[in-house]
Image 1 (spheres, helix red, strand yellow):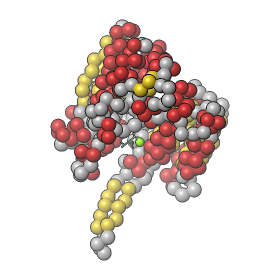
Image 2 (tube, helix red, strand yellow; image 1 turned 120 degrees about the horizontal axis):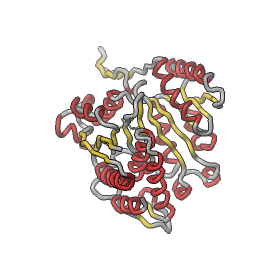
Image 3 (cartoon, protein in one colour; image 1 turned 45 degrees about the vertical axis):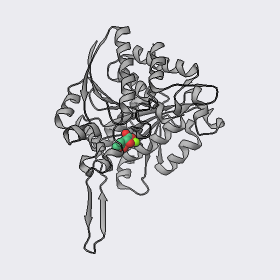
Image 4 (cartoon, protein in one colour; image 1 turned 180 degrees about the vertical axis):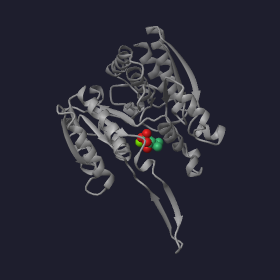
Length: 357
Ligand code: IPM
Ligand code: MG
């Protein structure tokens, strides 16, 4: 198959992981007889430096014209001072909404080899961690209006608006229920329905949708309780579905209990097959240029791209198996290093995965 892949190299440590992910894609292409062509796209800090805009329309168009987008991570202290509408993160948000990617899937699965890296007690980890977080990605407080104004008494006031419509909730919920049907058939919808109207609409819409999936065991949970349950007994969860900001927060927590945020991939999809695939961690400015960052989250995002956008299940399995093997043989990057293991740099981790592909 021939596929056009847009590459967003990202900021700070990000190009280091994207480099390794591209090597993996090239190897997959060679091994399975595919042709992957790449188009570089500037977004975030890189685009601010080049164009004074975190995602110029021409760069968004390149992404929309591609078969899928691979992204490292954007942002860093260098751009902390830029005006809010021009921040690197705005580029990412515009990419998500501009491409209509309304659901973000973030799996959090314990690698048995990394059980020791989980901050949770062994007895809790032993019960298993295999959660799929389905996060709404183009609505909620991220996309409502944001204003800061000066009041008459000279005090400042800031307002962020959180909005949801039924169809936005329903289409995200559907992805969660469909995913659950292919997994352990459990959906837990997370909200703050005891306080927020958007959450009450969220809950009512999910409950209505649940009736269409009688085989799925459905439950609701308040977000504060969910944050607690994720570290108390993560084995109770299969698919978690939640709105944008709650999903942002809970997915960081869920990735860390599974060992390291450095291992966690994600996919963002809408109605079509063209998506954005990215590790869920940030651009790690503190270790930029040191060849230290863990490329696995980005490489595993490639596996998700193969599986979800290109229907290349065998290729995806091969990538995941290669990562699994490297871990089994005791190779680690610094973030997941433990006693008795061999610590590799980012590029050496890429070499190790490539050698097992
Ligand atoms: C994420 C990130 C982004 C988000 C930031 C960079 C805007 O934290 O993908 O989880 O909040 O969605
Ligand atoms: Mg986040």
